[in-house]
Amino acid sequence: MTIAKLNNKHSETKREQILAGARAIFMEHGYAAASMEKIAKTAGVSKGTLYNYFENKETLFIALIQGECCKAEAHSAPPTEFSDAPPEPILTMIGQQWLMGLIDPAQQAFFRVVLAEALQFPELGQAVEASGPAQAMQHLGRYLEHLKQRGILDIADSTLAAEQFFALCDAGIVRKMQLSVAEPTAEAITRHTQHAVQLFLRGYRT
Image (tube, rainbow, N blue to C red; front, side, top):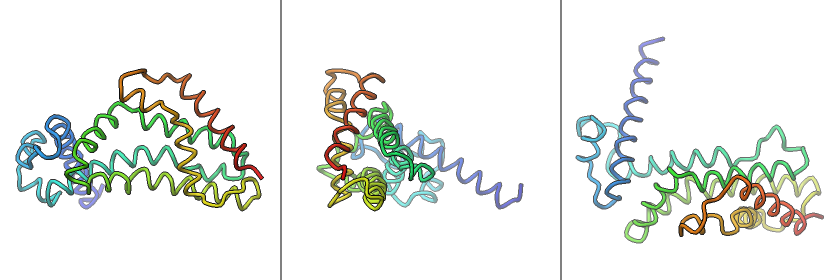
């Protein structure tokens, strides 16, 4: 391994160490009450090192948001190698993975912090939308547009259709979990997604 690669590896390790400390502080104190000093102490780095990696608390929090959103986005993008396969299994997979991302306990805890702070710091909510859900909608929208070009679906607005599909998959699962009414089961996720795919295709098939 070259010196440059070794330094990059160490830099990435240090960055992850800082993000882990920041996550712990934001989870415990929220965004407003968190400080760079607390984050540095929890991460086990000096404030100077912390500022070498992140300009301020906002950029650090947004980096955390982007990390969480990338996890969800990785699950919501249609696999290009299956782009010419029947849409049912692909949409079912996308819907199931979307729901699994939404109900992941770690992501739920993190996004509760965002929701709690979004009114006072709207840029945080905007960062979540831009880094995660909006990109998921774009990915699915492009796939739906592909299905339209193949003559399978008749969709006037693929972005709106993507929003509708994900909403159909949710159908109360996230709300009930957030309100401690019911924890989603694997069976419930499968059932919701299968019904969502059937209803969605029934509405948009040519």
